[in-house]
Image (cartoon, rainbow, N blue to C red):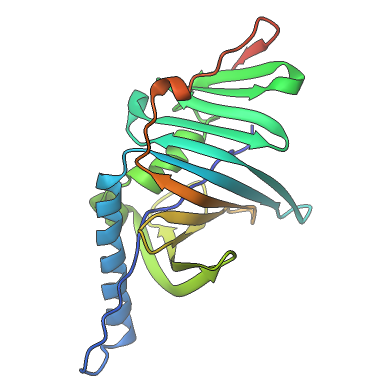
Length: 230
């Protein structure tokens, strides 16, 4: 089963001009990273819900091909059964929902729905969104070597701060890159696998703390849909 969603860490950097000479590059970088992590923590605490457009590009290093898709995202952060996610992809048309500790992947044209535990190895959504939105300041510092890569303008003219996160211990990927806008919201994340595969996800038209309920995430499956347990 594919990885359907990868989101980044919510961080922002503020640069303050001073009249003193700049510190050495290593100290300067450490200060920038510390500022970013502090902003990420505030965003994590304040975020209650999210609605946005979403695009995803998956690069296959073996065949050197990229699969692209677009859709909409609904998200309520949390742990365990309190977390809720819904992604409605337009092409190919399919819906992924995570609610009450279970994921459902509906492929309407095929009349198939895959269901399983949200924490299973086949479902990457909860773990990836946890990485992007629910990682605490202490967890981030303990788990990653973080590098500040600079300020960048993404397509659409969105100004962002760019980070690279390298896992300190064992992980299923080599590293991640995260871009965040001026509000502290992650708008793009790239995860690079050990085999060179990469997944890049972009959020557009982000609406924070909108009114959402668990009912917005539940899928009604007709009697014609075959359910496959994962």
